[in-house]
Length: 530
Image 1 (cartoon, rainbow, N blue to C red):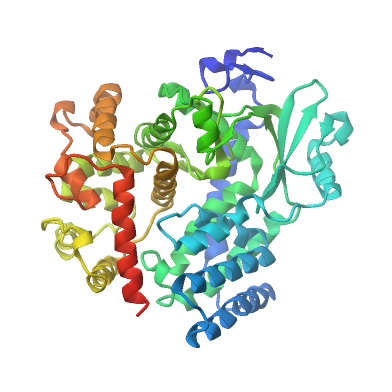
Image 2 (tube, one colour; image 1 turned 30 degrees about the vertical axis):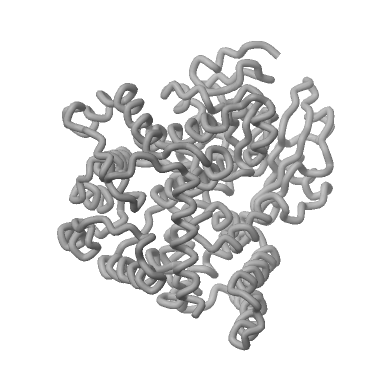
């Protein structure tokens, strides 16, 4: 392997199996049209239907009922020793049901598995098994897909091709292989019937969703039909690997342009990419959860977390592009401390208008500009265009002094959450795709911090990152917003309020924040479980 010229424009490894000429990649020109076609398909897949879309509806209802009804029977009769035992049982039942129903529901489970802090811990832990422990397709099926899409026998392209996959998930599975020319690669192979099944399942979900309105507490801020539409927007783009390969190139170029040297992207092959097959460079490293291994190798785990946070923020705020599905199976840390990003099926792409709205949201949040925050949320699509922003601020009591949630009883905490949810519902609040992906990534990084940097001072870190942003991007971002860079000043009282702590707080480690959260969650659980 030799040093590659493509590092002049992309965040690739110094040495690689091939060099990418961005202007002559065979599959790249198709990506914008494929992406537009995928977006245009969503309204038809998710439109409301009066007639059930085939027998699949009854299969889904029967499978979910078989999972949920026995749990309800046991719960109502007090058969569970603890609340946690009941949650563990229903979580396992839902995971098994998802695997039985196939790729669409497994993918939904994968999204839930990245929602630590948003969903019950038992549900998150159970659905983590959907990331790479899904039953794999037989090798004979894999061979047929690869040969059909590449137009050649396996032996005419690969010197070796492992029959056992490295991992198997909802849409695809990945195999280690070696090209005839000697390059070590990973081959991502789509399950043969997944595209048709996903589209059919989305129609089923869209038909069922209206019946669930008002019946699923966890869907409060985005009613079930909106959730189905949001899910459809993310999964349809994953059904064509040419879009994923283009995402790899775009994110690699973005990281290079921003000067972020802590991340690398594997090179997709310039010709061996089709709708159902993606051949890419193979990279090696530590599992993102392997804290002991990383520390023994001398890797600064706090810097790993810091790099991830900065890359996510820079991508969204400056470039409008960011990896949309961060979780432990989608990234690992290489021996030199850099993080390798994997699986680009979901990438957040902000239009120029929404990027500016997101930028205003982030700046308003750190300068305590409540009206600016609400206006930005409106412009991002989280609130209707005609929303009375002053009324939202008043109803949510955002203009009042921050109350430390650890001083509230379980009853008061539950009542406060219900009040906020009811107010937001009344204004027609929803969660746009890009904001959902960003929040989900932040939730993942929050959990990663617990493992990799529990003693990181969050207040000092936010101040440090803000200073870095001002130095590196201040002039550009101010120009984008039409303001003076000197007019933007970090308001630490606002930051502290966001954590629910008093303005006199000088230091807040992640470990301390987690203890506060656990206390709040325990009080709420104890109250609900009475």
